[in-house]
Length: 89
Image (cartoon, rainbow, N blue to C red; front, side, top):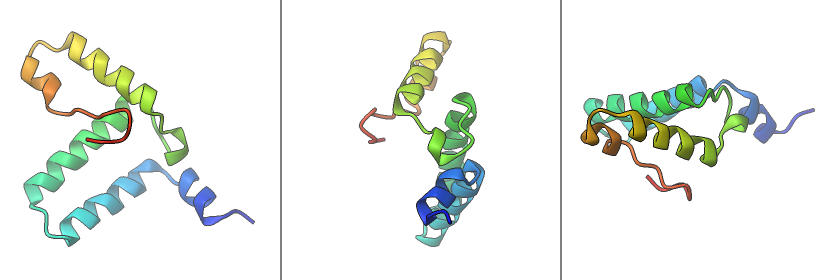
């Protein structure tokens, strides 16, 4: 029998993003903030090919962000989403 952690680690990342979106709305965040946050997280997850929580890798996220910043034609676009490798946003 698998543990709850194993179950969540194997669940599609989209389910976790949906739950996070619901959490943000439930605590009263604006619809605009929720939409922007979920969109940005979704772009990172897709860009890094993360399918489950078990796939998450801070180094991959950092490399993906660095690649976007290096190819961005707008300096503002590269500053919109900054994730510290230690987990801070």
